[in-house]
Image (tube, rainbow, N blue to C red):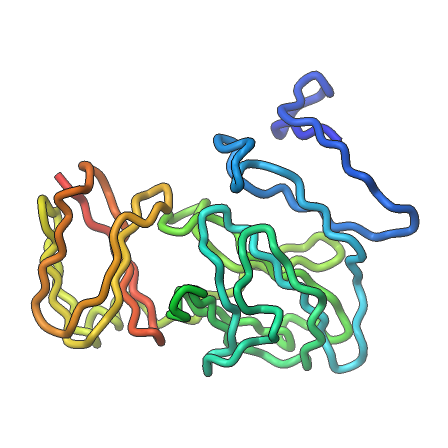
Length: 255
């Protein structure tokens, strides 16, 4: 199997060549995951074939297979919005790992992606199985994109049906404006050797560069705090605050 850029017209244009051992009479869904720049590394570009994918489910049920396909995201837990695991198999899911199909009643859900390291909430999403008309159907819900980026490469959750349709699951987190107001967030921007951050609640903080690499993290109490950024190079960074229920992201520039 050859992989080439869109618009290519010849096998000679292939960037990658893979041998995939397909089994007879078996359905597959194949994901192209990873970073082209990191070929040969754990998160480098590669094909991930998933065997025995399907289209149908029992009446009143949607069968959901969950796949972690975000190259720079850590191991995660997938929970309901009350913090309970969606299923035992959705705990500690790492990059390129996937669950078996989970048979879920066809309802509209709110789910959370939590960091496995401390079970803090990374992001929340709507999973409107009923609204999307997914009764008696099977889908793959996959995490894609890069942590700490925005736009086309931003981290997100997506639902793939057996006809190849992809639906982005809506983010259910409160708006940044509401959280900034509710948490009384005031921060310095641009920054130099430190980030002055004022909040009215205790929060965990993480700082990512635009490649999604975590460069600093910790915990701060409500009040005025000073976070050292002296080890960071000049550039733009994403600051993420979470109180284990809600998540706020904003960008700062270091001169």
